[in-house]
Length: 115
Image (cartoon, rainbow, N blue to C red; front, side):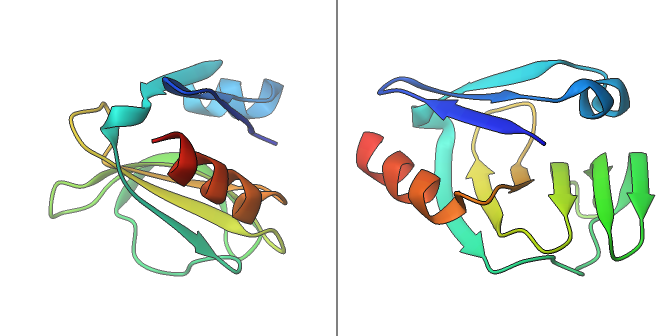
């Protein structure tokens, strides 16, 4: 599962072995100034995310990058039954992150304070 870490300047995502393989990267970092919005979803989102590169097991697991026809680029690491942190980014490689984490509410609150 993705591990999220942040301080007063940056957000870092460290991916597990299989996530890193599927996403073709071991980690990502963004300055906190790139965060445009933060939202916590109670669980899985079934919205249309776009064309993918990665693994999707419908209704259970999504570890992939997506490009929506509108041009929105998303990095997704979602697991069924776990809250999802939705982070909107500006001026970054991805427009949105959808990351499952059991500590989504605490991370969202911490990021809001840190920015």
